[in-house]
Image 1 (cartoon, helix red, strand yellow):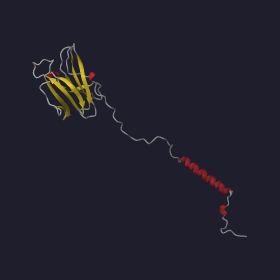
Image 2 (image 1 turned 30 degrees about the horizontal axis):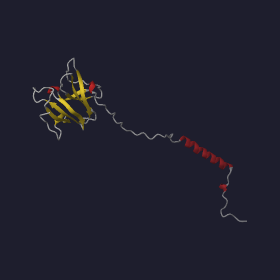
Image 3 (image 1 turned 180 degrees about the horizontal axis):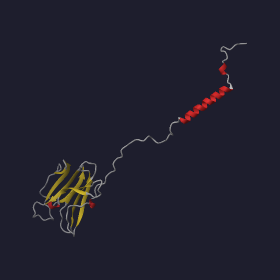
Image 4 (image 1 turned 45 degrees about the vertical axis):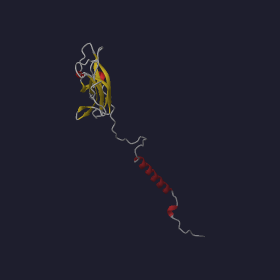
Length: 195
C-alpha cells in the first residue's frame, strides 16, 4: 500500500457545516450588494450646459414706421424702396427706406431714413435721415451691402430747373463711423454736374 505524498487534509472533506457556512456567506454578499447598488443606468448622455444662440431678429418693418414727412391729407406716404442690414455692427439689422409723398403729378423728392427697433418695442423708429426731402433729390440705384448704404442721387443745380428734369447726378455712400452716418463718394465714382 502506498501512502500519499501529501497527508490527507482534514478540511478538504465537505461536511454539512461547511455547506451552511458557504450558503450564509453567499447570502451576505448578495444582501450587501443589493443595498450598495449604483444608480439606475440611463441611455441619455450627460447634460452639457450650452448657451442658446440668439434668435435671429427680423428687420424693422418700414410699413409700420412713422416717418417725419408731411404729405398732407390728400396724399399718402409711399415707401418706394427698402433694404436691411446690420449697419452699426450690433448684431441687429436696421432697415433703410426710400420714402416720398405719392402724388399723381410730377416727381416728388425722396427721403432716405434709417429705422431700428428695440427688443421691447414692436414699433420701428427713425434714427437717422440720410436724405431730407427738402433737398429735392430723387434716389436711384439704392442698396445696402457690407454695412453700407449706397445710392445715386439725382438733383437740380438751381431752383429754376424744372422738377421733371434733374440735371445733377451723384453716387453716394453712407457708413456708420464714430456714432454717426458719414457720407462719402464710393471709390471709382465721381459726382457729375449733368445727369
